[in-house]
Amino acid sequence: MSKVVTFGEIMLRLAPQGFLRFSQASSFDVVYGGGESNVAVSLANYGVPVDFVTRLPKNDIGECAMMEMRKRGVNVDKIVWGGDRLGIYFLETGAVSRGSKVVYDRAHSAISEIESGMIDWDAVFDGVEWFHWTGITPAISQGAADVCLEAVKAASEKGITISTDLNYRAKLWKYCDDAHREAVMTELTSYCDIVLGNEEDAEMHFGIKPEGISVQTEGHNVKAEAFLSVCKQMMEKFPRAKKVITTLRGSISASHNTWAGVLYDGKKMYETRQYQITDIVDRVGGGDSFMGGLIYGLLKYPEDDQNALDFAVAASCLKHTIKGDANLATVAEVEKLMGGDASGRVAR
Image 1: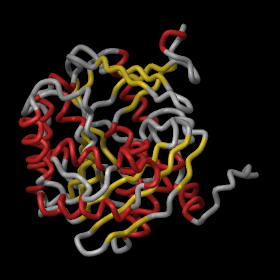
Image 2: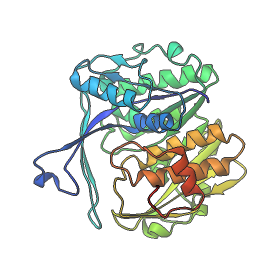
Image 3: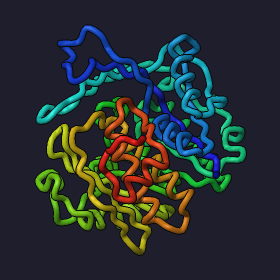
């Protein structure tokens, strides 16, 4: 199958056990993860050859992050080393009516201090057919945004398929004002063939809103067709985009979400079934697992957007049952759920 490259930051995740609050914690569980690294793990788990590119500090914690990726079958040969620290985020897992909380500690991380020219993109993209980045990376720092732009330009010159998950993070865009943020994201997204984002991403990055509906007031009853206008506006703004995809998450509570997706190819809108995800184990990385499933689906079913989209939604549905950032569901498990078997019976 085609080789994929993802580029971004991997972090150390520290979380109180179970549903404890930060103030109750006497210890933290350790996980490594990040938007683009999570996508890479999903793809490796599905048997897709994938490289994860990042910048890590040459110390024990940086080595642990690298080893975690290697353990999951992700190639780490293109990682560059430098800087003093790995970014950290603290996660307090919510339940029922109490939402989860994230506290970032990633200032001066190795990748936040990356500079143009540190990565040899010509070498990275040798034999590669797909490149993926997310809106988290350019939010880290101007340097990270500059290197991300280097990457999409190099990938574009080589005719590589480029995808993005817009991933707006209000807590990260600290180095610039809103106008600069929109300019950065507009230029980067203009190189993309596949664009994923929910209604908040489209509005906050580009001022694009669903027509005739308020997502906040509709809650979990939002219908897929409400986002057709978002997809059309995105394609008008970014004419290179061949497919615009939106995830549809309805938040009934922190423990119960509905989950579905739509894909628009400029002519037709594809829609998935809506899953009821109750008793959520870990929703962090849900969107990343969708993107990993979507890339795999589009590579495996290049002429069948419906099947690719169904795979992405089923894969991310299963991720909500798995502790940690990354999706460890297998292709067989995803296809079983796609086929309608959500019984959760013991496999003997």
